[in-house]
Amino acid sequence: MYWLGYHIHTYKKTRNSCYQYVALVHGISMGGGASLMVPMKFSVVTEKTVFASPEASIGFHTDCGFSYVSHLPGHLGEFFALTGARLNGKELVAAGLANHFVPLEVIFSFLAYNFLPLKPSLGSISSQDLPL
Image (cartoon, rainbow, N blue to C red; front, side, top):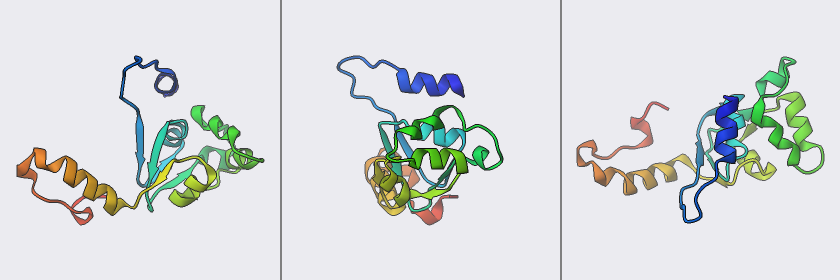
């Protein structure tokens, strides 16, 4: 986990590279998942996103990448790291821990429009068809 986090966030891309890591966060992102999401250049959250560092609420030190929240204004980062407080998607964007809030239905329509035509056998899907 520590090696993966370090590698993702320090990997040197070539000058002409157009590839970027994007975190699409729908559902629970706690502990290690939160540590991987926070330092990403692009992170997209939905209305079902729940974010926290639960190890803080049971007295453990926060995980490897979660110390990134220390850049937040005031003492907000310290508050999150020490209390394990939970945030939803809109709160993550307001706190500066995520870049974009996008409703899940918009993400599904984007994926269906851009990727499902590649495999006509899949047909059309909606959020009700997927086990989320």
